[in-house]
Length: 208
Picture (cartoon, rainbow, N blue to C red):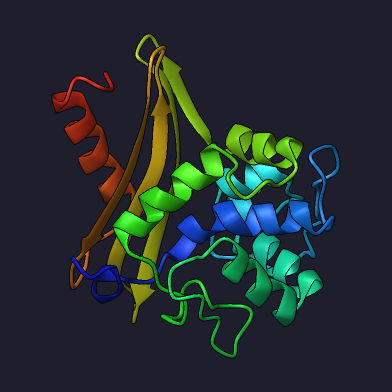
């Protein structure tokens, strides 16, 4: 299969790596990752507060990651995308929206390969930074193991057309990686992709 032909916008799943960019650039650190809310209204109440890395990942707070990109600058973002070999590595011209405006694209297979590189730190980044992002991605722990993940939802003209859920499960004897992408004229959300993923993982006996 040609990976390039199956590439779509990563939407908020890219925030895993934007967080790493912020950490590796020293814009944030595992100990000091808080940005102050500027008081502007946002579409989600959870965004209208100061954010640290964990809350920004959990609540998928756009302005937090736009601040990282703004402080890093275009060249640093471009170089980082090349360093980690992220999808088509295309930022377009708008640094605010490149991961959601169809400039940057990645396939589900590439998402899984990149998650493996991230998990195993094949980039040779500071291990503290990798651990900080992993900690922020933790969704739940059960007797089956621990589920780590990030959703993404692409909206066009008020319709949810692109839903992602990517991540991995750590069990006592293995790590399972996954990337689910759904597309539709409406109703394709990250939460819908999450439900599908959890159902499949349950059927496979990997996650209960």
